[in-house]
Image (cartoon, rainbow, N blue to C red; front, side):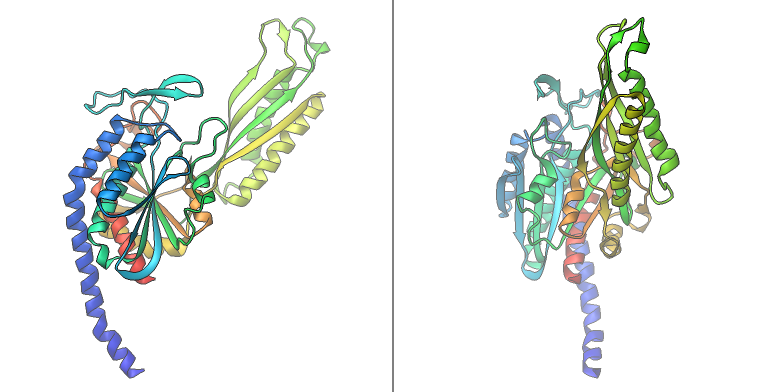
Length: 428
């Protein structure tokens, strides 16, 4: 026992020195690669591609990974790219993920690299823009791959770089995104998975995180109401689906305000579409409500589904109408494993400084990164992209034409990923 303690005490300074050395190497290499990261990000921004159509983006990524000597797999989950880098030391398999797809949004900016791209989306020609920052995610992971490839002999374990298509949702009835990648075996053998999302409302260079539930599940629902038509002058002869629909909308909000324990976690139910009728003097036979559900607790998610069905069906029944409820789960709750979160916090602080790392609250937006967490402990964090000195309340929102990111400190994301790989890998 005494010999063991002596060996441990004599080894600690060496281990600490090595950790510092790796941190310094990462910082130096991440700073050096930053101009490339910015160049890659702006190129991808200028030439965006929609979900499941990221053909040129995938080719751009694969070419870069191959140039680094990284093993490359393409065509994963349609257009996804996987890079595998085997380190020189034993350790776990660690996955890093970036999403590649853009949105059908018309960019409103005067940037020299603004998008003027159009593409087909559900049978229509639409403008295309990286209005959510996925261009930054890809560039950061490309930069991370370059830094780690240069430090290959010291990496404790294997790094799997996941460049994922269709995070915004596959078009029409197509499969896609993280759920398809998991289905195709991308997470097989992975011990932990990490991801980030840039934010237009967090100051550039800063990192925000939260243990436990971070981002909401996203469900899309439709409620088809079957009534009875009549002339607008004789409403008593009808079963008015519009009236039924309005009562259902009100009833759904009581699930939030009167039936859900919002002390446990927030709940959002939004009816975003209401379709019915063709003429102003005809009470129609049918109506259709469509919307989204956001929950931050998986048990509450199931309970809300049950209550929506019950509320819609019973309200319709009270009018003599019929309501058919369909709920389609798009993403799960993005959940940060508590032990993993505590483990990687020092890595984040190395990247952004202890003053640059803060705890955030729930976000009712959703991320399909959540599916990776069903296969291994997962950790997801926010990286700031708002210019210094700006008001977060006035920052252009994600998914809007004015969305804007300051890319001058994307190296903080590279540093975070690289430090996570070395710190987590050595602890395992």
